[in-house]
View 1 (cartoon, rainbow, N blue to C red):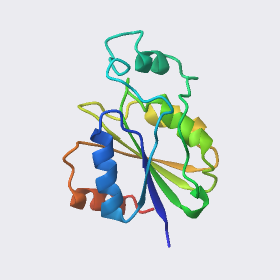
View 2 (view 1 turned 30 degrees about the vertical axis):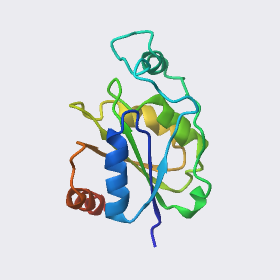
View 3 (view 1 turned 120 degrees about the vertical axis):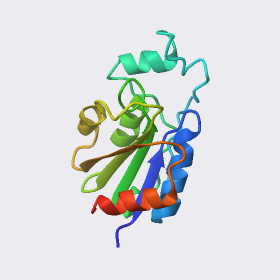
View 4 (view 1 turned 135 degrees about the horizontal axis):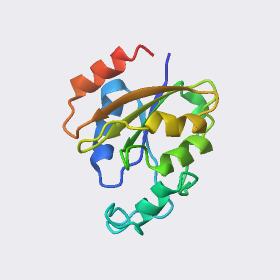
Length: 159
């Protein structure tokens, strides 16, 4: 049986809602990727080139510290990783999570939330952080995505 995990990072709560709905819809465990230092609204101000998120995203080697990784990653075959799209890609905290987890032989499916952007360069920027895993580009979802849509999407992935 394919044991699934939905791991997500959510700065404002939108991705958290989608991830929770996805986990429930597909029968997966849920794990929140939490930064050691939570993001404030000032940190997330993309118009401020000195804001924390702007500084992190302008430095591709940035790896914000995460509070923890799932204790039993070995029990999962498929890991869905969700995040908001920042600057046309995943926040660098996602690289931290992927590089901190043993993903050898696992399928990693990415999904995102966005007000209007697509996945952009997400696959290109995350692939080096997933050595030994099969990285699958998922989809960008709106907060109001239904459980039926999420189940259908996961089924269509044919994992």
